[in-house]
Length: 308
Length: 308
Image 1 (cartoon, chains in turn orange, brown):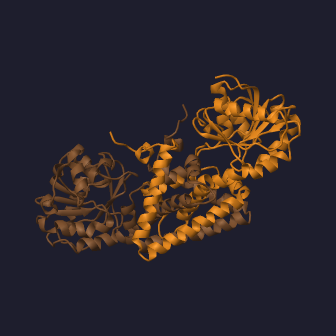
Image 2: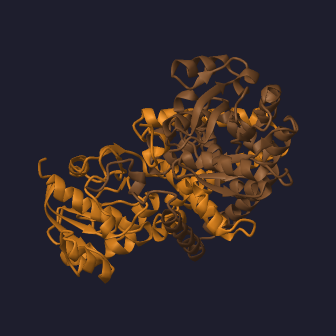
């Protein structure tokens, strides 16, 4: 794979930042990789596991870098931009990996100098694990990278977007461009609400008096365990997502609750046909997800013992 | 593995019934396996794929069988028992695989002669697939089989329970005994509510005006796809579960909605600490589920490309 950038800097060495480092190393998309994390313990660990060249000063980490990737939780993006702003070279491309775009664009743009190219982005990739050790080179393979470019950024901006797109393709991702407001609504449905629901059901189960936590754990394979996986995701990251995509999340959550109330009523009144029709509709979307290459068709994701 | 029953009959050749046949064949837990399904098309398919000896008459299917397993949807259990009642031999053990126990016990017991031993049961095993082709021999390996024996059934009843337990162990399952009312509450939490939530979010996403169905499918890997798997489960089976475990489901659903409303409020008012604490608590249960051997620790269940 061709080199896309000579020198890049990754700010934040969690699951996503560390995976970008690993993917850039593996693909040769960058020659030199600088890494900074605000947490000294994370920096120490990043050094131990050879996660690029680790710096203790964010301005030094980004010096001379052609690409700077902000890979912190959404709520820390503005501060991360501010911390490295004075080190940025003229004409550098700055991007981020935030799961929310409108709020991040505002926070980051306000802290960047005018002589860099800010191209916001969001890789739809991750696992339930977090921290520098969780990163791996193939995380972005065949996953979507969404770019939400800014309007009216001058004649050199389109070339900057194209170069960033080439970088993500070198890491194995498929790249789409989208309006940031649209991104935030779509992700509220496909990602933020599912995570919120999972957090809620798992925390609720822990609190029940009628069923003990050990019973829930023991019999979790009957459905509940799937929710525990999503609910194991990083709590700081998700707190920031909900605080920063509030309106879109509340809108779709309102819709979810409304539909759930209707389902509750159908159960109470024994309306079997209503239940069947709804379950039958829901089933069809599974086939579409598999046909779109977004999940495996193997029963139970192949995680248990499977047909031989 | 030793033979446990000479002759068994499976009534209902869906995912669970077909898996019992396959597991009994593979383990040698039964010598002769008779199969009946109320649907002629399913019987034809069962014959094609060699699913035991297939009968067109339920009374003939159960004739001389030492064990009869009712493996229909919960709502059809009473009728299934009635359909084969006159063929049952004296002293036969009759069990079922229903996901709800109290309602099934009532419906089945009312249709059985007094000279058989009815030992209700529920294997906590399944996949999102259904029908005779979905069955496979290892489905019950290391999964829980819950038996909910009846009270006061006479001196020979305990031996019948033990023999049924030995059969399930021969199929690879771990066996627990439980009170039927307790079973229904525990499963409402670990299985019925998670499925209801998944059906609801998937059906809701299909109905949205703000985000198209193709967008949801395209970006589903960001969380939503996990819910589509559960929501692909058999709609008839699940309709019957909710109609027959109504009280327990409504109770835990009320609790879920209450907690979700509190979470909604925390998002609206920007209460970051409340969100963080709840997400952090939810995360811990994941470790317990993995430690209990109820799920794999592999990131994303290992379904995507994983760390090399």
